[in-house]
Length: 251
Image 1 (cartoon, rainbow, N blue to C red):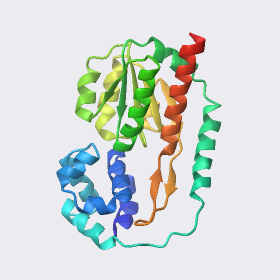
Image 2 (tube, helix red, strand yellow):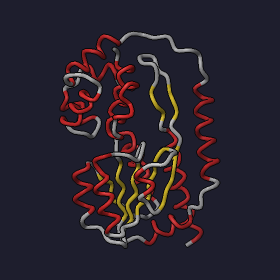
Image 3 (tube, rainbow, N blue to C red):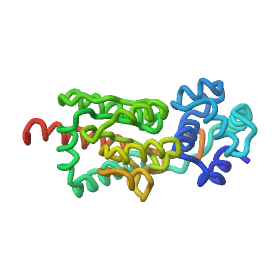
């Protein structure tokens, strides 16, 4: 059984963090074959134990066996012709259509008035886009703190108050490792803004503000398909631009 078959068979068992590791593997199969478990954990902002758990969820003995399977699959595969630029435009257009239906004003007011703003990303892709978002807010005069790692998130959550704001970017909104932290934040009545893919999920259900984005399939030359999360980048850019407009013209 190849890697993609194992993923499809066990997909419902995978956590948000697992799916992010799978996404990284799908996009960087040749690179992953040459990495150690510790190096791969560093690339995906996880831990060696998380890498081991993913391997076992896929029915493998460990990361070494996972790499062996990948090494057997590395070969050029045929991809049916597809207009990727049109697909990208479609995702961007859908994001703007969605954003036109969202009332950003309550969230913008909270971002402006909060004492401290914390941004937490559940995976490496979200973290990359969140860094750009964080920087855009700095350029608009809003200081913020970008948090990495579930342990750090939990530690910081114990210092938060109702005057702060937490923005969490996630894929499915079901990351097991942060659910207890989110519950603690709720008990402290700290406002949360969730940014997740469309659909009902734990994170959005436990947030005061919700933003959504679309995830689409993206074929490539070494595996059947991966996932494009460009929608996350777009909704964060729109939010940062909305905030800049708010600062310049509305306050």
